[in-house]
Image 1 (spheres, rainbow, N blue to C red):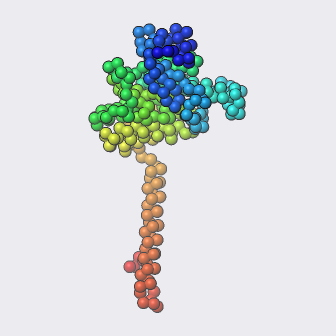
Image 2 (cartoon, helix red, strand yellow; image 1 turned 120 degrees about the vertical axis):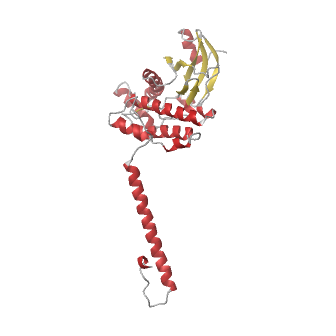
Image 3 (cartoon, rainbow, N blue to C red; image 1 turned 90 degrees about the vertical axis):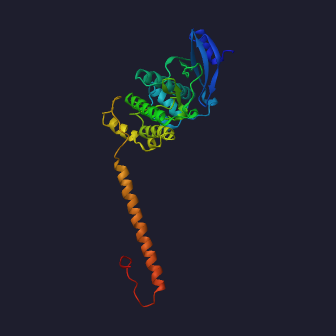
Amino acid sequence: MKTPKRIEPLVEAGLVDEVIRPLMSGKEAAVYVVRCGDELRCAKVYKEANKRSFRQAAQYQEGRKVRNSRDARAMAKGSKYGRKGQEDAWQNAEVGALFRLASAGVRVPKPYDFLEGVLLMELVDDGEGDVAPRLNDVDLHPDDAREFHAFMVHEVVKMLCAGLVHGDLSEFNVLLGPEGPVIIDLPQAVDAAGNNHAFKMLERDVGNMAAYFGQFAPELKFTKYAKEMWALYEAGELTPDSPLTGEFDDPEDAADIDAVMREIKATLAEEARRQALLNAEDEPRGEEPPPPWMQ
């Protein structure tokens, strides 16, 4: 096929020999299958800000580093220079996350190069020459669901040990290759230590995995891996090999139960009072109704 204009710099630099076909086009980028020597790889072409539907929420940008205070001021003001800096930071977030996670042993597509807003990376296939399916496109045996869920929890732990939270992990952002799940789409990745929303995002990521795999193995829906690993992370005790149980005694849960019990008791007391008033209307006048606890 004709080489898209955005990929031409990679061809000129000798990084890409031929564009084979489009793979997909999403809200953030268009992805092409390209030939690099004897290998097939992916070229992810990031869409310009005015051509993509995804808008970064402030909670994802919190904690991301910029080159200097001038860049930070320009980005805050929304100037032309600042918008360019924000665009670069958004693209660099996924590129940086991929290289960082690949180095930490997390199963992500192997990144090769990044040039002119195009990321060149591994093409994850299904072992038979076709592109690997997303998790949401497959049905799983309960034993496979348990195995893949355990694998994904371990990968999330390794990500957290590397200082990152995916921020948008779901069955739509995980491919199923011949050797198991592969995590993709990381432009929303956040710094675990520098972002105040990191735990909520981690809890949502892990919860999405439990909900998906729980369709095939229902007991997984009741696990609490996010709170367990975050407690270890905050204590400085989390390692890639930390044993996790999926159970966690949360003081907040106990507080919630106490609050529910107080609400139940208050409701029962109000109902008793209401019943006493109703009974009083039915009794002869002049007689004091007995208190609720004596009825």
